Image 1 (tube, rainbow, N blue to C red):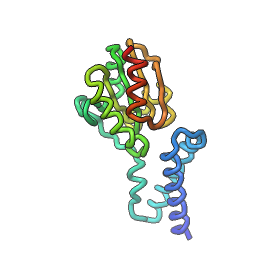
Image 2 (cartoon, helix red, strand yellow):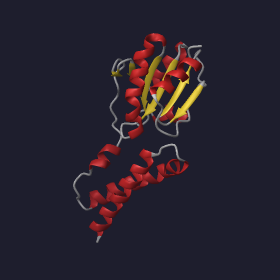
Image 3 (cartoon, one colour):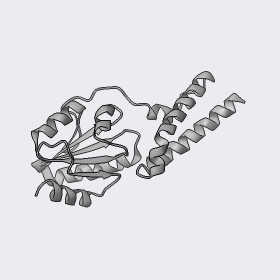
Length: 184
């Protein structure tokens, strides 16, 4: 009976995770985040008690606690950054786009080629950073990141973003926003 309950809890977790990942901007998805965490914990406890094999979605949902090196590039022209590196980049005052993402987030992965293309098109005129919200939760909370992916646009050394976009955006729309808000 417990074994069946554990599998049922795992199924619910998978459906809830998929719903939150597919529609991160919907209010219901935002409300479900705390529930999702509790369900993942409960499923992990069930799996541990019953000695079930490691579940791939639990491993994917668990944050990795490795530090990103300063010069590691995510894709052409995009740099993975820590909170300290983000602070330095904002204080430098140049045009800056920051992508707050998570490895388990589907829309975040869809945004990667779009950002890479915009970085290629704009070259050195703008700096693009990616910050993993699982590795840097404090800066994400401080900047009010509630949905993934979230793009924040900074200029002139101000910590107040000139623009905020939550969710997926196409490369052309992204380039238009950068040129309008950061490069004019």
